Length: 297
Image 1 (cartoon, helix red, strand yellow):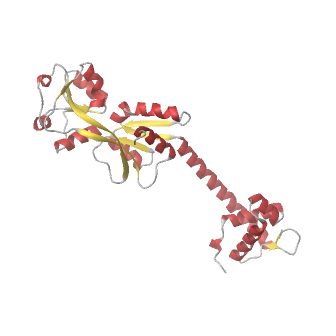
Image 2 (cartoon, rainbow, N blue to C red):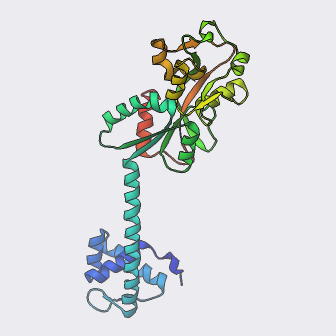
Image 3 (cartoon, rainbow, N blue to C red):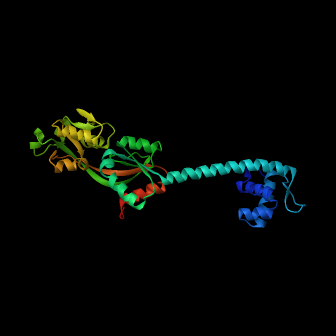
């Protein structure tokens, strides 16, 4: 006898339909299959179970005693399967409908707003949730499956994440107009490494990029948890800072901050979209990334 584990959900659905509608032909019409296919499927179920489920000597399809018992069990299996499939579909629909993004502070504050505006013009009914945090926390949120898509500015992308370049950025040394460094033509790599700096917190892409360029971990004189807080500190005449040119563009235009040229140090960095491996992006996340990359992405 074939193992009962070979029984399929479609066979059980057919048995329940035969019991409820009184004939194989009526059950076949309900399930949108042919009557010969339904008959063959019922015989296959009986073969799998080693039981005679229908009395084929009567008109229609009358269940045997074994058939009635199996039908009761089959109905419970079919109902449970319907709950599973309906719930899974609801989860998938909800996930596809809502897009959850995490972005590092520089990307989240200076690039994502325009990306979101473009996305909403093409997808006005699809809700989007944006979380702004440092690059390390973006990576953690992806790994914990809390977000669908991340944007980071850290120079190193972990091997367990897929990535796509979405832009390039440059870090710049900035001071207040009255700071002694504002009168300098340039600062070299060694001197930059010796400066007392205000800096973003450990885990930020900006700080990691600077540490990587200098070849050693940056130990700031003052650690702050946002670009805005660092800029206030610098503008007040306090410590110099190395920040993204995206973050300080307005302050440089207004002369609230002054850029100090750097020698022999490359502070350019790539900005990446990242998501979990293996697997594909959700449709909503794929649509959003396609908009970020543009027609030539």
